[in-house]
Length: 275
Image 1 (cartoon, helix red, strand yellow):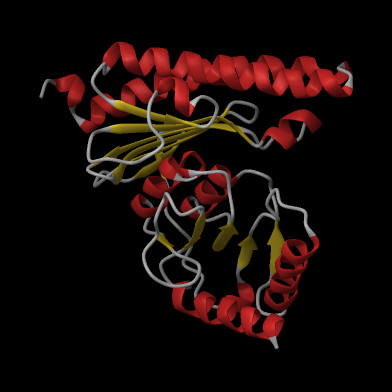
Image 2: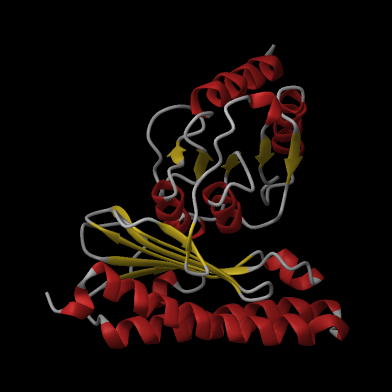
């Protein structure tokens, strides 16, 4: 393996790709305010596709033998199943609803798994210019400065993030709001920022203490963030207990202290809802 094939090399190439894609997002973010409704949808699609193309072209140029999983064009670029091969898992624009509304929580997320283990993560918000990076075994950083998860160990003083998800049928919405209702009595407050990747980064840098989401889009939402959380001393896990699985479309994360307490609270929330 040449130097370019080291984790540091992978990270450098991923950061270049994220910054280039971020430029496209920044331009779209600031131009779209006067676009009609259909036009906004088109703009999101165009921005998404342009960013994904740019990122994959950049990565393929450096790593022609790697595999690729992307949100927009999984079929076009490769596989939707995770193998042991080095695999880049990319969300070119996380927070599309925020993008449409001009709410500045949007990002590019680029993760690399090696033997199925998330090993390199880059999450870049070009609007507020925050670049989160993590490399397996080498720590997590925000704009080059080391970050670490919070030390909060009381659930009642913790800030919880979640997302409602995209499904809007009555039973799903009811289950979601009942869960939140129960949890609101046990934490300090709740945030829904509209980006799964940035929520994970919030755990990593201590802005948030706990995060969970059920039914997010796919592994591209979490592949990068998982590395960043773990390298910052946080924990990622399945919200219903067990190990985190980036392919399972459900994920929880916390600082190093709150996992067990949160799992108990979440279980109680489920039981309240079912009784």
